[in-house]
Amino acid sequence: MESRPLRALFICEKGVHFSAVAREMMRSGWECSAITLSRSHLTRVKGWSEILLIDKSSPFIPTVLSQHKDFLLSFDFISFGTDKYLGEVAASSLSQLEKKILLPISTDMGLAVMDSKIGFTSLVKKLQLPTPRSSTFSTRAELLEECSSFTPPFVIKGDRGGGGSAVKVIRSLEELDPLDELQPGVIQEFLNLKPVGVEVIFNQGRVASWAYCADQLFTANFGPSMRRHYSKPPSLDFLEHLEKFGEATGAQGFANASFFYLPEANSHQIFECDLRANHWVRLYPYLGVDVATLLSHEWNGEVFTPPFAEEGETFIHYGRALTAAGDAHDAHAFLSAMRMYRRSSDFLAGEGHFFIYTALNAMKFLPQWLKKFLKSLRRYI
Image (cartoon, rainbow, N blue to C red; front, top):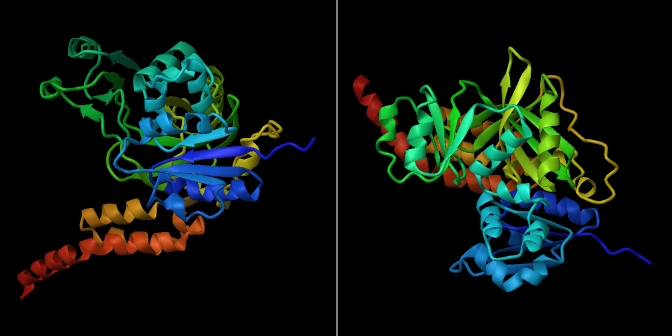
């Protein structure tokens, strides 16, 4: 009896980061479908088995679950575009079994970490993984009580909120006074170290692929990265942490983990692991990551990591880099980013038209920069 093709579903309102991976999976024989908005980037991808469009005036995930639940339950692999989506599915009225089918986990401990820094912190402590000292709180009274055991500076993270939107460094206890509407969250010791990123693919709780990013340039403090330098790690101890986390959650699919590397101990401390794809999966086809095989039942258990050169490789997120330079009216940073277009994720994903559009859109800052430049010339006239 001939086996049916494996089926993958990508769920995202915009979905730029999914397009390159989806095309590669289609070429490898997967039947890929998408649920998105009518004008999203995913609608431009050719070869979908099915593409379902959600009205932008409707709440996205609640509409997907209420109208297409049976459709979702028929797939071998599902990838949601944001942490918020994962949290909404985990908090929905679906049964526990249905949630474990749809989400990139297969255990109760996995459900607890969906879009929850409290859940992640609690699990890491339970697994006794090396991590920065931290405590959780649910109320302002608990926050103030827990803060007494931390010496400023320390970090407060809201339980939910992507891109660093709910993260704040507290440098004195007086800074706690304005935080009246703070959501439940985590207090974490402040380490004056650059975070290390590790892009991961899990298959049934096991690490199938990883790529180590030792140096990142961010759009803002705790914000998303706009430039990444991938290289060989100084120590492989982080793999053991990921294996324990993957086994406990039954992780399946894309993930991006964050660590601090402690040079004096030559070891890593994990402080975050989001079980969803980020923008940098657009590089996977270029890096030779065989997503179609690594996600399938045919994976032979061999762990893949891209063969980076000794000095590593640097890539840029064109949109974020150009926009950040434009917002700062920094012409030098803008031109520097422009020159790196051949190392941009859009260019390497085979979507040159997209980075050209991004560049033109970011140039809206040029009139303000020119005005500022001419004003500065008055000093010499």
